[in-house]
Image (spheres, rainbow, N blue to C red):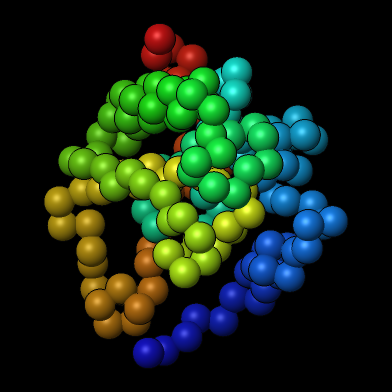
Length: 165
């Protein structure tokens, strides 16, 4: 497999791989700082918020994140669990109007062993998918192409989420 050199990722990865319980969590920081454009926070609910993935699998890849810093699925309150589902449904509707995907992947990697990059703060991925969305780059170069500007997409998705009830 070839590698695409991306030194900017090392700062991001180090922020959670080497984090101890005393260091800041990227999700907690995004929630607390209230600099939503900078952190790509799309929407804030009562117990959870929606944030764009800074390293998306596809355009429109977002995460639904509880406000509370909790690491396990079983620590979610009934209110948090319910809001995760409501925000997911609302986001699907918004994404359908903004980027018109053919389907979605939705789920969570529960624990490091299951593939969680950030395992200390549970979060749920919602990844838009299109028929034939794999092109030659992942196949030949093991590189994923993201064709939309994230700042533009943030504004469009934020506007669409406001319109969805």
